Length: 88
Figure 1 (cartoon, rainbow, N blue to C red):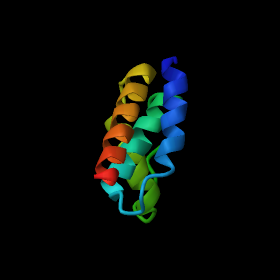
Figure 2 (figure 1 turned 30 degrees about the vertical axis):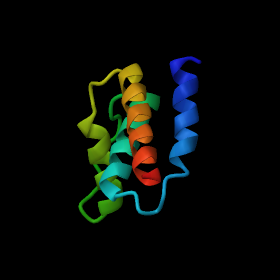
Figure 3 (figure 1 turned 90 degrees about the vertical axis):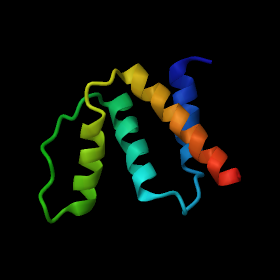
């Protein structure tokens, strides 16, 4: 299985993470996902009154510079970690 296929598989598995998954972990996954799919941030930072989108943008910006392949690998690793924690 190639990296892209494994990434797609874990993107589906991420949808099954429990509600108890912290926002911090969700934001990490979001940033890695966007970096893997889109690449570096290509939009301006949302305004101060749009806290949710601003947090998501910040999470994406935090991984700026990673290659798409590296972001995919980190995303897969993080999803595996969270699934293991959820089943423990």
